[in-house]
Length: 247
Image 1: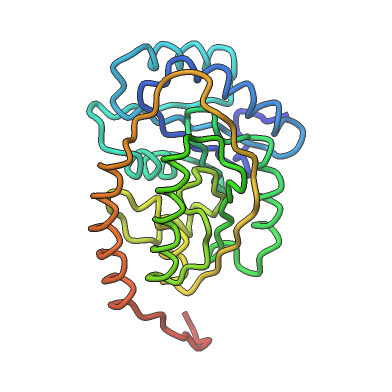
Image 2: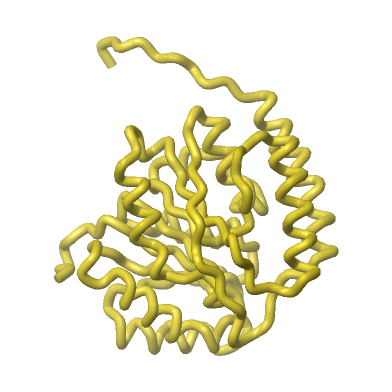
């Protein structure tokens, strides 16, 4: 059992906006997947919701003591919500999940085990790969095209960076450059820092409640400028080789 003073090994960070109908069910699934497997906390970041998401989180914290939450007064985007959650987390390792219930928390233990086995977990990210996506045909096709273009230009060896399920270390994430939509480029940013990435097939489920906050056209338009920005970051980066010394 987790004690009040204990520092958990894993923090599950869940960014949400207007997901009132998915809060309690997803938190229950997270607990079912991780109880008895790893000492964990759940950190929800409410990115300026204007529905009953705050009330549902308050209800969840009464029922599940491991749950913590924070709220952006105004919506700042998913990447900033993830960053706020990682900074607030106490655990060494982080698992991120989308708040719509399409990611399966039951996949987290296997991804965490891959991270634990890494020679240097701070330079390693385990990315979920939705090999059987439960989205509309338009979303699947546009995502397939975007992933192929990104892999060709960034050479990040990742088939599905759009999957919200990823596991990494808190220290490794905080060492990355931060910008809007960065959550879609985490593998490339880890490689830029001299790290490594592995993709693991994970379950993907249809959205049962609520509506998607993303459209295909607006995502494609911002994706072009983001991709060019990440290419610039990679070109301007250098990873030093450090000899052992007195430091």
